Image (cartoon, rainbow, N blue to C red; front, side):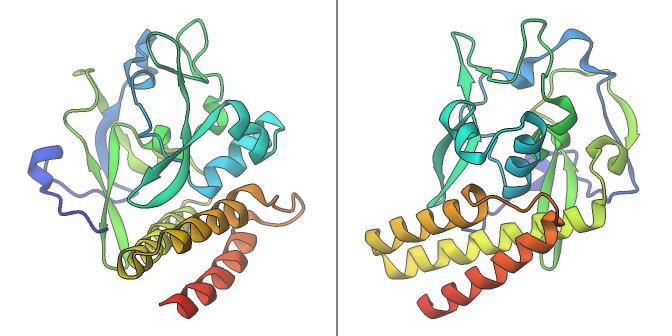
Length: 223
């Protein structure tokens, strides 16, 4: 489902690209970890996030889903998100010092914060969310440096293509109104893109696009 967003209500009203400067740098947060608590099921993970966490923690997707990740429904799609634990509903990866224990391979959602993505035809721009971070002394930083992800062009293409694929799946759900089909498609997406291991000796993106081509062929049969 494509959401109608009024930029001025959620952001500073500007659209940013990877080489733009944006007031997002919290200077290492300096002990603040508010954005790592009470996030519910909002820190949704894409296949690259789970692959990156799995490599960093030396765990399979199934092992992550048994403890650190949970599943929730996002516009019909069943997708993994970071688990929140304890009375403060803290991120499962937040340590006793209030620091991220997986910072080097943290998910894309966390790398973006307090930025967000504004999807348009054939791509997306970045936005600076104005209601998300309580730190009012942020300084300017280049968007690509803040996101801190290698091979950013390929990553951005992957993010957009994954977003569009999930929209295609949702369209089938809405048109078919078939609960059994919805269940089977969700199981397929979870199994093919998350739970089926990626070859460590091959490029992640190459393998992802092989799976995406296969999945889009299946969707074409259901459309």
